[in-house]
Image (cartoon, rainbow, N blue to C red; front, side):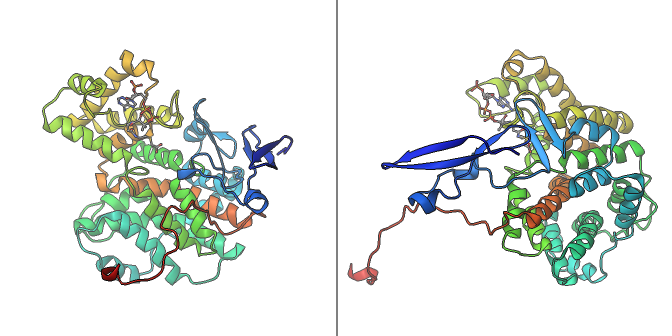
Length: 427
Ligand code: CMC
């Protein structure tokens, strides 16, 4: 990290020196932390679109070049060669584990997957029709009542294991509750993704035979969603953690932030689009024509991206996984046929080619989840399962940072100036 060039800001006859920071990939920021103290003015950046909130060594993204790296490792290599628990270790510890470390970490996660039995009653107290997202957010928050020790490096290590191990159980039980089926307990002989599929789809009457192609696709989805630097939910985890609230509270808040349709809900829109096309009896060609028509407000959901302007590296990986899953499951759904036709037409259409509109991660993840049998209201719960690793890594990084301080943005006040209290009727 080199802090070579400074900037000078002139305002109202005063000149302020703003030190610059340069990261390891040469992205540069101006340090404005002394600006208010020296001039009385603040910066204004709604949505923090141009604000660096921290220094972080976890994840690097270059949207123009289609780059996503965890701790320096390209996402394509991790998706091909690694598995979700190894990537989680990488995000948490800064480097890949050796065999002994990975085995011990995997074993530790495997033996902590059960929930305290009182959680059965906790789940039972939610309405049957409860959406699984608030149920998972509430359950993760409630874990702080079961594990009340103060956050220290040792307890945080255990908490990390508990969160990663128990979240798939929480997710599967939130689904079982919503369909009124008995909860299925975890199995220690299965890997992370297979165990989750077992808890989702087995019943006391029937075992669920896990297809390794499906389990691998799910594991890849978790890898691809594991971190995405300072996005809305990760920033939420950091903001809550900055008050020294416990990690369960911070992660629960992150899950709630992820629930919003502008963040974790986009793959649901893909399925809604496929539903609409099927119900209206439209062809893929007709829908693409409508999406290109500037007089319609229709868009091809799952295409285009705000950050990735050439391609979404996660989508490239998922395209193959998606086709593998479809072949393994047999292409037996009208919706999935339409999805593949939309992809084929749009990738060869001048409108999409000229505007650099490629399928994004949500196009394929929605289709894979649908093919596996994961219901639409569980999509964001699945996203949170992968992102859990990144949220914890970012929480821990913040906690250890020498720059740790409570998050407290300023504002430009636009309300009424001072006025005296007076009954409204006598004004
Ligand atoms: N279908 C049809 N036309 C599109 C689409 C689309 N999906 N996306 C962009 N365009 C057109 C848009 O009309 C515009 O055309 P013109 O230049 O003729 O006016 C041009 O492409 C540029 O679009 P933009 O809206 O300026 O691009 P943006 O960077 O502001 O928007 C986006 C990015 C993701 C919001 C947008 O591409 C979109 O709405 N896509 C569909 C929704 C979607 O898939 N969202 C999930 C994004 S991935 C989330 C994640 O990473 O977690």
